[in-house]
Image 1 (tube, rainbow, N blue to C red):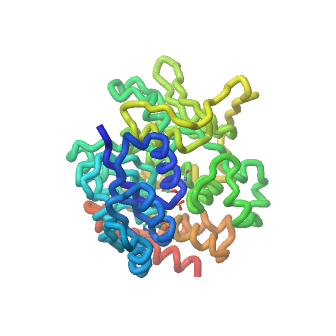
Image 2: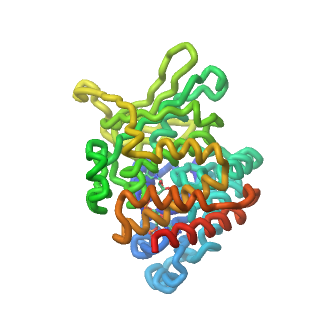
Length: 382
Ligand SMILES: NC(=O)c1ccc[n+]([C@@H]2O[C@H](COP(=O)([O-])OP(=O)(O)OC[C@H]3O[C@@H](n4cnc5c(N)ncnc54)[C@H](OP(=O)(O)O)[C@@H]3O)[C@@H](O)[C@H]2O)c1
């Protein structure tokens, strides 16, 4: 059966890798819609190459440019938030959710409501609206299959039939570009250094999140929703080689691990083809050539967000939305050279302590809290 697939965030690192996976599985997929925010040239060339039925460009001012680039084709063009939601709801079998940040929330929810299974890369959606998303997915009989390599690994080894036999989830972390940088030097690191991840080649926001280890903190929240576990059952362990993508420890002392090369095409292929596995062109892991696999305790003093996230989860949804929103604003400010690297965590901490709202029960309420925290965080930046 050919699967109808739409890719939200087709021009990003995950989006492009998804199309690379499609390249060696062309007979398995039919591309419905592709979306982007600004990169209209790449979006239109992808749409022509993969004969998409529709594109959505988030930035409405680029609608005219898209019309020009696609003139002579019968590809439908939509723009703005409504366009993204329409692209997500196009009668897909599966939707790759790979927009960065909370901007992916509405389109991803629209895809769930339309009944499509979700290959979920966008962790920020789950952090901000995990319970709403998981409940809607279960009502609509929709599977959320994680693309994040750690959660994808856990998804492959977790005993969903006997969750009471799971002792804990062990999330691995590469440690990011500053694993061996001294705490005193962190305030001087540049954006270029922070963007240089030692193992993964990713978009700018997640690269900075990996440098602060905010990415791992967000992943703890993501895992709580995906596997319905309390955060105390989730342990973080630093594994610089990024070969063991995560582990599940069982009550009898057995630990199951998923291993693979450091290449996002593997988890993407698994998520798109689930429950089958399909051959990929990714080079296979040669364990004999891997001289060592090492594991360390994280440095909680240097990366305080790893402790902070436990309080955030205990404080509930409003704090999770604030944690994410303040981070999005602080990362933008760091990338625009407005703040120092070490200010990112300070701004998150200060902003979250100022938020006050009742727990949200709808996506619009989630977005209202997100708007409120962005204003608070911007105030600290200026
Ligand atoms: N990259 C990885 O290896 C990786 C691994 C695990 C999880 N993830 C998660 O996957 C998501 C995407 O990451 P990425 O690294 O692929 O990011 P990225 O390279 O920055 O790509 C982001 C995509 O989202 C689009 N976009 C940006 N802002 C938007 C907005 N406001 N509205 C609509 N679309 C918007 C971008 O369009 P333009 O190109 O036009 O700006 C682009 O297509 C993130 O949530 C990240 O945490 C990524």
